[in-house]
Amino acid sequence: MKIIGAGLPRTATTTQWIALRMLGLPTYHMKDMMADLRRGVDVWRRAYLGQEPWDEVFDGYEATVDWPAAYHWRELMDKYPEAKILLSVRDGDAWAKSMNDTINQIYFGDSFMRSMCQARYRIDPDWAAWMDLNIDTLWKGPRGAAANTFGEREPLVEAMNRWNDEVKSTVPADRLIVWQPKDGWEPICEGLGVAVPDEPLPHAFDTEMFKSSITGGAVAAVSEYWKKAHPEG
Image (tube, rainbow, N blue to C red; front, top):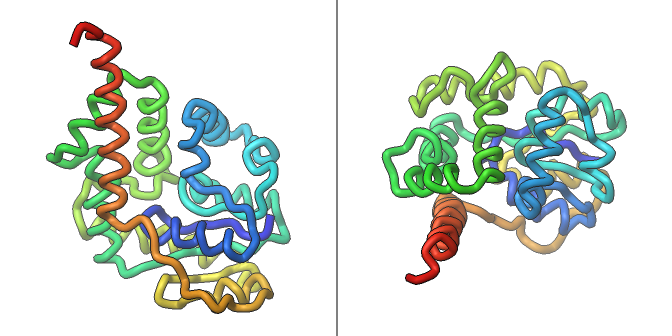
């Protein structure tokens, strides 16, 4: 393992995933978890309970970014002592807005996305388990990344700052890469000791793409459930 992402969701983690793969590092991302949701939720639930199934999760990978792996950055830092810790950051107000426009819509929003996600929750046990795991890692307990926030801007900004400060104060300076998208390739490549690619840094999975992916998946699941329940039409 060469890179452990410690950045919160909505800090360009998909951009990091693409960039690290472009640098030749097989990289774990929530996309990998959701590609096999039943297995993914099972293994990360075990991780949440302290069983540390890291060899099973990261077999074949050389890097990890995004949630829920970032929730476990402390354990992963100890498990892989040679890995660099990649902390992705962004402006607090911009992050709060992004969270409220995306992830928080699933749980707190007065929106079509929330309605469809809640409908899917009732008919899809794997999806329900995924939503519950997010609640546990984002909002519950002393380690919940966004604990005591329910969409309010100031508490969200405080939660982000608290998270980032803890990573910065814990990780040794020679292992820490602090990065934001405007920094481009250089901090990541310098931390890895590799050349900067000629291609521009990719930009991926903005707010509209998130909404389309989550809402579209929920609509498809509910539609399929309805067709099976009412084959006559």
